Image (cartoon, helix red, strand yellow):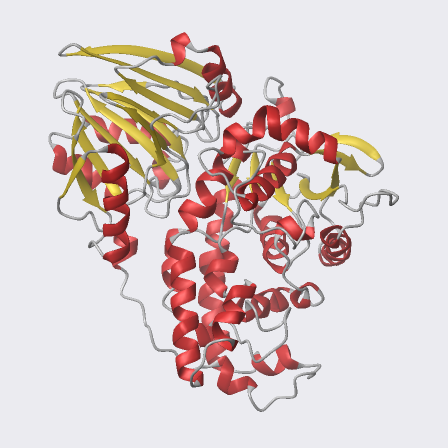
Length: 571
């Protein structure tokens, strides 16, 4: 993912070696900056490019006509006849045709894929900033008086340790616009009609930055307008309530239901398309072979691999769409156990699960060259990197949970470990993760608790579960996505999450909770039941019954005695 940066009335990349270096880690293939003056407002636009789409690197900042564009992300719905074009170049050409603000809104509305972007109109002095509607890519805003910074990575290198007066991940509510000569008066073209949750985000945003945001017409992307069927003819609770809890052929019985099969088929088409786009939109050579000629069969794709159902499904589908001769890296991470005085063992829960799942994948797809990579991180290495570097990427988030997951993702995406008994450094350009599956399909313990601990009828319990799923989904961008983008991109890799794809998300969220999970069944069966059935259909028979573990516990970076929401002493 590229490193994009915009400074208004304040020092920028040209005066900060640290900031320049951290942007370069995100985009090592090209970097440049442009200074702009508009009505005595000094600005700097900078970008470090990570090449992923098109036949060659597209330089940024991208200047075309009246516009200057910074783009970080992937556009997956470019017309087929232009598929060899860089998505940045394609977007720049589309923006250059815009005659008014309405045209810009229409262009942004049409985009599908994860992105954050900055567009500056050199004639009018209007700056546009935006994150995609699902908030998959980071964009941070810092402000002090009339000074503003927008940047795709974190930057907290103040010598005295103080925070900047105001900082926040830009809420992915729509397209923001303001004149750089009046940076306290903003317009927002929201993605959809404003609801209570969005109003709260706008209120918080206004209070932190002391600006006024006026709401304009909403953009309404086509995928958000899909009129999906909301009543389906199956209910896992009804189907499972008369079955024995220890039923050995439970999945086979559920898969005899024609309505379940129909929905699994519809889901499969969406997920396969999402995976296909995310593994094929990358250059034909790995990082190590970038400047070489000829065929490269090294891994261009790495999967963060705990061995659970989410990542195993993504591995199986990646196999289908990655070139037959290419390797695929499966990266499993383990941290030194916290127990003092014991001999170091790397056989943490996720390591044991991953070994079993890897064995099943090899049986299913023996022709694929799978690189199973074990990443082992000592406590000393963890704390040294956390203190010197990782904490800056996690910023402005500050909890124990952020420390644990952010660090795990950073070390795993670095891809430095042991493969077939030898030291190995993954040359992959893309890191595939299972993010979003738990929020969509009911994979967390709190979802089970929302059902069982609620006092009421089964219908009321399901209603409470629905509220919990909605709450989790509405905050995923703030809890996870921006942070994960920053830590993975810092290793010059693009994070791609196939479960968080526009059409797939819209489809799954039209289900009722009784069609996604069933907490009448035990852990490792009832949670994410719909997804487990899909994996079982693919042939992942053993993996489909693997119990869900959060990465911080499965990798043993954290222990369950810690309170996840407490402030981290390291951040």
